[in-house]
Image (cartoon, rainbow, N blue to C red; front, top):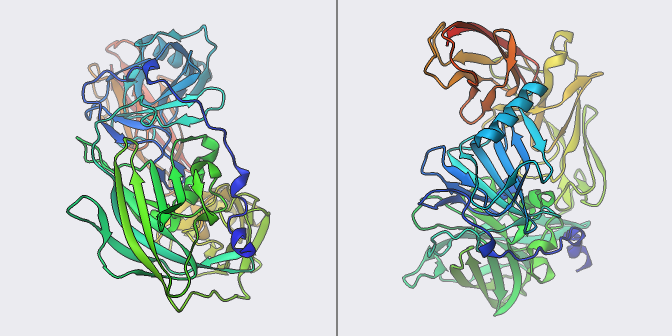
Length: 575
């Protein structure tokens, strides 16, 4: 028992006090529209983070008026290429903060102030903070317009409510602030069972055994097999689930999952809220290795070391199910969405005679969440994993692999090295160092790359110095040293010398082969002007902010990728 619990040793270290309940009557709907449909809900499990708010549909268009949900003031404005893009933060009198993301633009006076600050700072992105008296708002005041900026895959509003003192995020649907039409129960897709053994304080798991699930005529769920599921002396279950809402085809995450054995509850996961500090712990709540290959929520009915107690109101023996050979039990799993709809699955389990036994591997390196670790792959490569970065104790098998092939413009400069499997998430970055000789002419463009499942290389980052490339990264799997020699591509979305008197903006298509667009600078008639990047659309856009003068203007645009390669475009237009 003592060694089994080592698997979950650190779970109680991260604790959050529960936030106060919201009063739905304090708030109005954040957007002026009739449909009120959502495309994503609070707390959805995504690789690397819980979804921090709700995504509200805008009927596939931009420009819907956004309103202050309660009295308060504008406390922050942000413009960035990624993340929430154009975002506005309202500190409200009731002790909460409302966040609106992916805006097309702010209301006119705020937009003008942001434009002035961008010019003054000569910065495409800004983050501006304000005291209470600068931008006061009343409930219902228009504060901006919905859009598709930042890391947005289509027009929508990302909306959050946070507790102002702690910045803890609220589940606004469970709190009754946002009330989508929803009488559709969650869907239970699949169940997996994993047996666990322990070697030297490290849990070793069997290959997951998977069982298909179907919905019966009464609306409940059952396994497609009628016989009991064979289980070992100790293990846990994993459930794949999804949810739907009325009027939309999107799939959603679930609010709560419970499990009971012979009528006795032993596990409950619940998504009521969290701070951004804990957002990455979604990779411990989910079964990450299965999640990255599934479109469903994949929830582990057990608590790893890196999964905070906050998410588990009920937890017996960390979710481990113990079954003696020949012993039979009845397992019930219930899933509930944030609108109160429920689905359940029941099936029998039976202890089998043979059980899973892990064997010690003398070549494996044991690493633990509560320790700093240095793991080497021969003399040429090492990874330094800091305390708290792992979600559970692990055995690592560091190795030097083959030298992969590079794509166009990519020079491969080392073999690949593997310290952790690609299915192993890290909560905080590790320090990776790979030693190799790099020609002088390539050194400034040399970084680490990862090798994807299909063999292609992708940018990780880092820099070369004194015979080695070092990167601070959460990327796991195969890592290799490469140099990127190809500059970005720039294509104007207008003809040379075009008359743009009737256009609202100057637009360019930009792309890069490997390391991505890192920086850009646009000059019109020799003067710096702000330029917005829309990474999901691959464009750079300068929105005209002066009246047309029917004269010829010069353009000078430079774009730099993540490895320092630079492209330049010069041209003219009439406006």
